[in-house]
Image 1 (cartoon, helix red, strand yellow):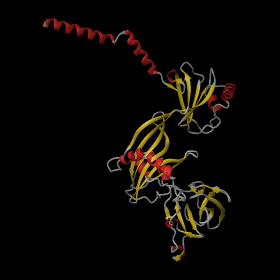
Image 2 (cartoon, one colour):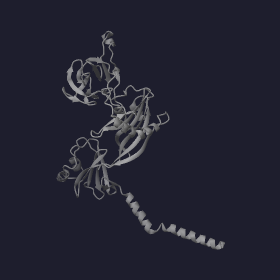
Image 3 (cartoon, one colour):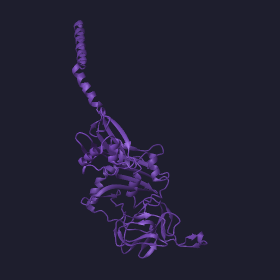
Image 4 (cartoon, helix red, strand yellow):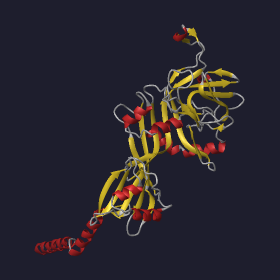
Length: 431
């Protein structure tokens, strides 16, 4: 009986081995070869690049589309014909110096290329077929939107924190926009810290083309936590605003400062003494924000421009009346962008930092009036934005539950580690 069992077992092993060997049959080998052949194809820009010799160059000063083609073996009549065929389909009139272009030559061709590829932007390229069926088109690359989270500890500036943590430095400006009404980013304290959830756009799998938006954040500043969650209170207008954990709008009627990044170098001070004037008291009724020449100056609130002019002391300056209570003024501009009588909105560029008038360095002197009297803007209790309706408040508080949980689960930065992780990917095909 045992012998019969052993014999049956050996027969089963033989059958099993034969079935394993059959998986390596010629038919399967052919499939494998086909798969290898497909993988070796290098499809890009609509061409199999394995079939071409690629010449990669940069646009030089003075280069034109025509001159590049003529320098590479295409005659002027051919160039003219190409231009006629791609007219109104792709723009090659202005080639940017330093940008890359590629010429694709068939491997049996020496005289002239078959295609011209130009990538003026990271998220798109222009392809022009120069021979056979001539055509030109602009192609938008597929964009991947990645949900990411990160954190940081302030040692010096917010920008340096981003750089040291490996986060996209664009987050500096996005966080500055979110907290523009609540935090002066040139008066951060060492030890301030933040956590943020945001989306970032990528092409070619790993090339970032910028931050899309901040979805949620918490900034611990001066011993207080400032939450921020994105929300669209008016779907018709499509305007996204940020609210805290209690549905209070972060936006205020006035921005903290007329420049996004600029340290306060001189505060409002009615008892200021200046050594140049024999240490006499010379009141300073403005607040000076230092910034490099050419930095955009922003209107701190909506209003009407009542002055856009020049004077010997103020240099180029703009005055805005916001309502019957508040007015602001911006001095020493390099150049003004707005005219008297023009309506401006909060955050709109009204001019650029300069050194006109009585000034020893580039800055904007920001002056603030309340009820006709110049005051210190940092000491005023300024009005808040219109509160959210009770109906929307319930909708908002329900909408942020998951985001707040995710945000709270991110550890605040410790000296041993930063977080910069990708949580999920969605694809947006922009073709």
